[in-house]
Image (cartoon, rainbow, N blue to C red):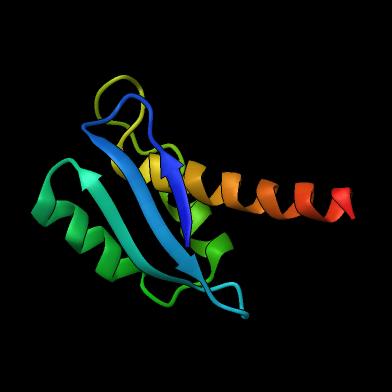
Length: 89
């Protein structure tokens, strides 16, 4: 499970899991517009990380970002955490 703290949105956190094929699962937003964010979670379920990241990047709402944009940033942070873990080995 990966936890990302959002910035500039009504949601405060995004939690998700990634399987061995780099597909995203069980996306949950904490805070924000519940119905819309449940919809986002269902729409991205089982999709490749790279596809979700590029599809949602740059969507604007308030503060020049949005919950979908923050999910793309969360995926980027997840990938960076993997790289950092490799570098430490």
